[in-house]
Structures are given as C-alpha cells and as structure tokens.
Length: 80
Image 1 (spheres, rainbow, N blue to C red):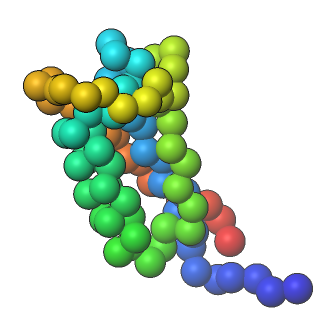
Image 2 (cartoon, rainbow, N blue to C red):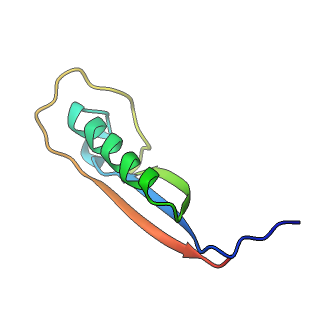
C-alpha cells in the first residue's frame, strides 16, 4: 500500500448563478475554464468537486447572456 506524505487539497467550485439555475453563459464558461486552469497549476490539488448554488446544479447552456457571474473556489486541506 502506498501513502502520500504530500498534503492534499480538495477544491470545490460552485457555479454561482442561482437565479438562472446556474445556466451556462459565455461569462460563466470563461470563469469555469479560468478556475480549472488555476486549479490544474496547483500541484497540491488532488480532486475538484463542482457544485451549483441554489436548487439546481446546472440547467444547461443559454444562447444569449449579458449578466455577470462568478465561481467560488474553495480549497480544503486533507490529512494524508
């Protein structure tokens, strides 16, 4: 059995457009890609959990968008 002595991080990304049930706008997709790139560059991140704010994870893509949006990223350290 192998054990890691490197501290692990579980990152949580929350789609934060609950008013539209986290529909994927251009802005949200750009924020999602940027967040994934940032997390990929962090060698301590071992897992990423993607959630949605409000009552829906994500209802899909919308065709037209003018609303700004955000993704909240949190990191939780786990004991090895």
